[in-house]
Image (cartoon, each protein chain N blue to C red):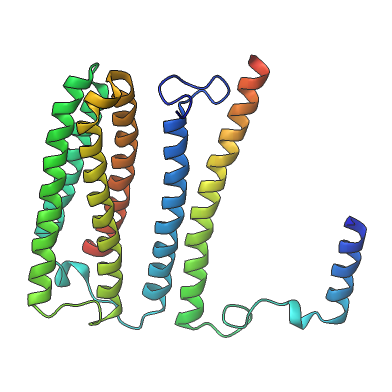
Length: 189
Length: 70
């Protein structure tokens, strides 16, 4: 069994779960950072850059922003709950909201494809589908992790589940921050 | 070893300064949208990298502080 998954390591002051997640998030920051760098290159050097407000569905994008923020708020509440049972209910609710986010995003993609907006249409849309697609994959990954934490309560017990929920809180906060940047770059500019 | 590296680097700079210059896409060429774009991309990527590395430095300092206090 991996040590220090429940209690904090004396030298680092955090559990191995938290430390591992921070390292994972650091690699994720580099991944998205490279994409944002590509965005800066393409946007600044482009002779013409379409307006996201005119091209994309701002109402659906704003709705998804609210959905994601409320989902993360529920995850924070789940992490603040003192028991695994309490956090399980909150986490289930957060998972449902995250599924709703993916549903809205799918509907948005469908509408865009119907209008003939594809990644090959222009550089703006290529960046849009790359960034939002990768972000949506992270949301789907988070949903799977949520379900894993919910179903694992009976197997791994109370304390480990609470550690997992705290790790999920960090993960979803990161996914939120990335979405906010994407929203500003793609929908509002 | 360090002296050898320093000597080799100095020699390279003295013999072939042009070969060591940055790529012509973003160095000493007339301002073009691509040049400006590359600069913007570099600034963004540098910002991200410095941010992540600062996090690692912060964590290492935290470990050292905890070690001293224990």
